[in-house]
Length: 243
Image (cartoon, rainbow, N blue to C red; front, side, top):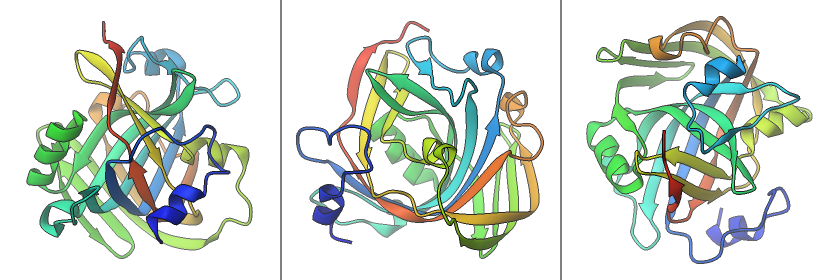
């Protein structure tokens, strides 16, 4: 789809597009979403005080999102596929800041070392390398340093007939807030509304020892999406981090 058409489609957004030119293009494809309701007191340990944890009907959520990053590039340059395309897994929760609802990453992993180094240096996001392998109907990741691992085998179902309020609350997020050690960094993004399918997990093995109080048992909700084309603006430093 033409970038201009994406930018002209905004009725699904909760606020207006940012001022100024966008800076990066990327695609988040073949995305698997696993969602858990969590305990607020336990989640508070992982989120900076400067950010307010967003709640759905009084409850916080954490999600594991495993997808394929493709065609990431600066605005006026082409994608370089050995760097631009890689598998990614993030663990995120939902926050509010500056009157906007967004996400906060508890963890973010990429399947190529060089891509992680470049992404971390440009964005200040806490990328780290994990070994990942994806095939049709499966997704695997391991990181011996952290003791992390994810193994999924799944079967895709039909498109959702209609999205619930919770479906949209968990997926339609147009800002990212992340602590860099010195500040809270804000990123604004834009994409069309996520197309969502059902997904049946045939097998799930998940181990993130740091978050074992948050990610427990089977997810309460799952989604799958073929993906979205994403426009991103430059990072803004929104305040000091005193954590």
